[in-house]
Image (tube, rainbow, N blue to C red; front, side, top):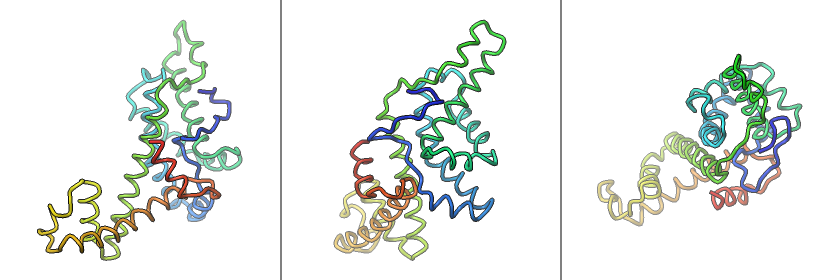
Length: 231
């Protein structure tokens, strides 16, 4: 892991995705409501990966992961210029967030070491010694969870609640169609068609999230394949 002052090198399976500037711009144009949506997105998608990242550092003694991460979000996302500073930094959002989290950990370390003989350690770089694959898996888990939530909302709003139930029962709970279609009053063939409709909604939701967290020039299909294969 590099010093927080250095720009982290991107990795093929980097868990911290880049963010599509167009989406950020659109939300910022909406004022506080849009900023709140950006914050919600950041906290929803990055909380679990940051949790895994924190547990892979030597600074996990600082406090409980949720307490530390909540403190980080509360401190950084409340700063009026946090996003503006990111925009002029030249960094992708994933690098900006991980750098900011590293600095936050150093700040907490200084507070813990204040008045102690070994206080110089407070300025040591934050080192990640964990399994980077675990961070990748945490990100994919967060991404899929958000896509499922968005897809269910989409299906419900468009009158496809039953289709979603079939999709979720078969693909997420792993039940063969034959085990539950009778109670829904449909046959297996109809269930396959209904599940396909809901699956398309899930794919749209997933692509939207990946596109939102990409540079905008990436091949979204290739990026999704890379994320799933890397996890």
